[in-house]
Length: 440
Image (cartoon, rainbow, N blue to C red; front, side, top):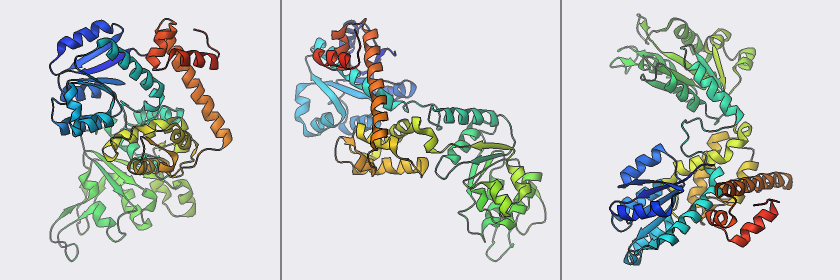
């Protein structure tokens, strides 16, 4: 069980912080003096609970609101002078962003109780917030993502061509970026090219560049996209859409690492690593005659497969929470996250559009939701059928049992303290113990 941790922002009143330390000996309290220091602390460590000690009313309103909007995943408690709340702007901010607030002079015993209550509530919701602090753009902890990250780590160490396959919207470009960042070419450029988005009559000049006078309107030399990736990585997205006549030119470049600009007679050496991606099966395209077999084998020295979202159901909630916080600037300050019903709907959906569909639904819901929590209707998702609902209920019941057991272990089987930490009454705690067949 992780220790109780509190991020305390206290610009001036360090004496009150010391009293709080004495009243909360089983908490790890990290104190900072400014919002900038708090941002740095939140980048380095994950905190479930934060305390604003005389920050509200002492700093500019917009500065405080911007900070709280950026870090709305933390459960914040505010301490400020009683007259502050009379100002409409500060009152709205407290209502939108704070779990609770206390006015001066402080009743430390009541504040300690509040912080325990807030932490207990945060711990119950914690399984939904694993995305926070994720060290990589390849978010997820399911077996499929563990295999993908292992593949990325291995292929990044060598300089051979990589072919990334995955369904549309599954994250092929993110995978390519992860390989580039971990490779010896990380300091060089990574140039992405969508082979299906360039007009067929422009592809040759865009990829290879041209010399002045090569055609009408070519008033000066132009460096092509391949040449601009010199010293780094060239990422050819949707390589299966490349016209057949250009595949021969690309094959020569992949083999010899040289290009010839349109209208030129001299070859130019280019030092790049080639990564390509496709949502179509290139082996089948080769069998149909739509893709050159020799080019396929040149590009697929190191094949990498990106799993679909259907294969990553364990990561669905984590990803949804990640995108909720990533696009926090789009949401209403009153919107706190996903309701339990929304989580169930997310887990039951098939996600044919993969991660791209998840991002779109979450962003739309963040704008359209009227209440405090995102509901299935906001995501335009239906509630799951009875068998799936029963499976989700079992998972939620198991998580609740684990949270109660961990809290009892942390408090030495003290039911009263465990109830206080979880933010429930003693009567409710006994009811939960009976429900799960547990003994204190």
